[in-house]
Amino acid sequence: MAEASVATENIEEIEEQMPAQEDGKLRSIRDIVKDLSKPVAKRHLRVRRQGGKEIGYIAWHDAIKYLDHYAPGWNYEVRSMDSIGGKLILTIRLSIPCLEGVVFREATGQEDESKDTYGDSSSNAESMALRRAAAKFGLGLYLYDQ
View 1: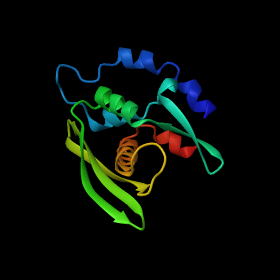
View 2: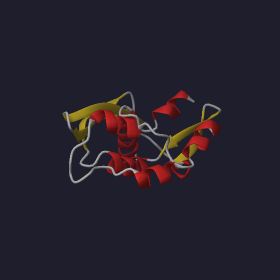
View 3: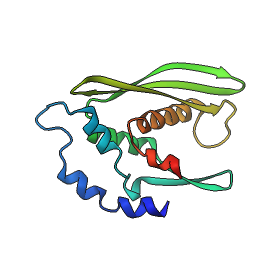
View 4: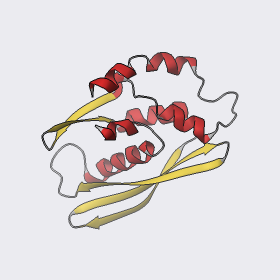
């Protein structure tokens, strides 16, 4: 986690220098993925303990800010919602308009239906699915290596 933190200190300067989209022109998906793959600003990283390890992640509302900046016009839709073995499993499709057309990635999120901690099972599963789909475009993908 320390290595990622060092690399993220100047992301705000990079964001200010790089226009997300010039004059309404669509950008190449390669450029969008390259920008989304940049390290997440340190202030946007959260840490939770899971299985005795500290895991770095980006909150859903911060993921949305990055998508808004680097992939204007993005959207997502819930494709399915299933209940299997006491877990709610939600699948979303994240779509990004780009020079090559609309490119999409799908991902799932799951949560125990009898959740007794923060949030409800559907919003937590949706948040997880959105962040996972965004990672398939590069956003915070490096965090999965840790």
